[in-house]
Picture (tube, rainbow, N blue to C red):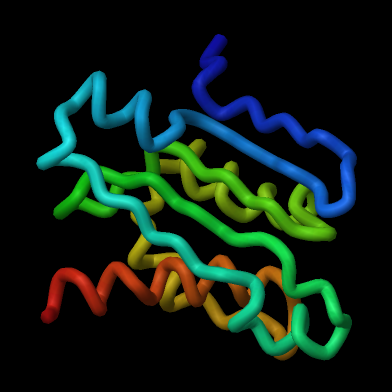
Length: 126
């Protein structure tokens, strides 16, 4: 049984959802040079703005160049629902940059996952 992709959610306001490793855990295990974090603030997400639910963020922890997802934390009003997409990617070893190519309905909270994944290209192509 693989327990590395077991999400949890704390139902507060906003919700806190997490799966896999935290940034600190990944850096301790693999070294900070091999780990990269992509963070997107909900205050920049159109749906969060229209719903007046701008508190929170999406943070995806990866291996720096391969984009393999090691873990994620979402703090948002629908964090528990949003985490499924990242769990699926982790379970099937889908790298973060492929989430960037996934078409999301607009405007939705899960669009924030794509926005976080888009940062992979900002960092690797710059």
